[in-house]
Image 1: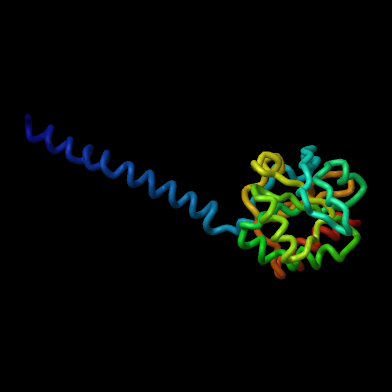
Image 2: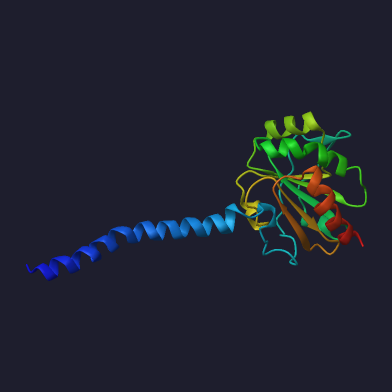
Length: 194
């Protein structure tokens, strides 16, 4: 082998060794800029401006208000009323943090509060609502997560504002906090109520 052939192969071999590292670093930077540096509550939803999913979900068995079974999720209930739809679970730590805020929101009778219980055990869900109080007028159970997928849910908690026409007008990814309740969620609800 000539000296010239050996010296030409060395840079090529080095390039082939470094190429996967460069590709990895490029992808890591892309993910960091797209996901890590942004606010996850600002993830766009393809469902904004579209009708709420027409998925019926059964009620949370044994959940009662004034002795009557709390109904499940019926998409027909969205027509004519502004709705706040909250996807939650008893095993979700941020859901525990937002529960008192949902209880406060439930006092505002200008809109209805609807819950979707996501991949949860019925006993745990009832205990959760027993601990914090049930803010929901209806609670649909989504044991396998299929109904939530139709809503475009990434994880729990997530909250949607649905207009009187049954159209999704806003989506909040992550928990309701005192800060985003006043600066984001209430203004979106007020817009839907006009």
